[in-house]
Length: 132
Image (tube, rainbow, N blue to C red; front, side, top):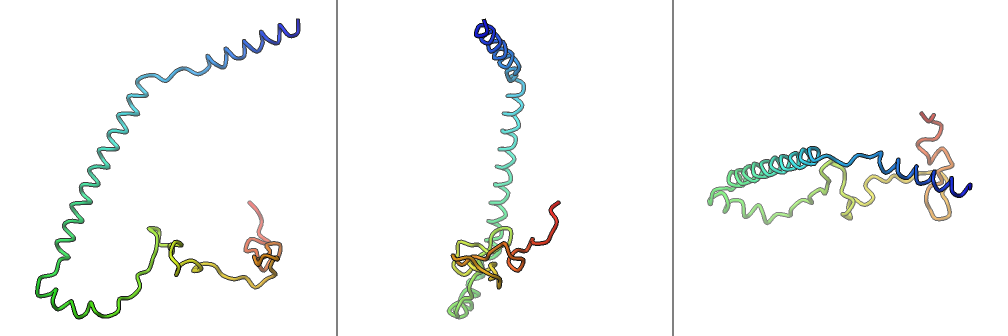
């Protein structure tokens, strides 16, 4: 009898869980698809404007033929290294000159593998601070 009642109870719970969630209505789907199409259209407009601006700046940046000849001797001078940074302005770690740019060696005790031992206050910047 216990097995029978347990089975009935499990079926009842399964049915209530299955019936609890109503299927998505078509109006929600239509609203989502409409929002997506509007978003895509806005992105296309922005991309088109960006292309126009880039084309205009390229045309404005083109020097006159006489200016090109004058610029050639200056171009043979050594070119300075360009700084590799991300959009946010932080150094881009994919390049060799930026690999160790922000790492500062700590002067405290180190573990066997050479990394700073964070149990010591000299290595841990958060040591002594209260957790909020």
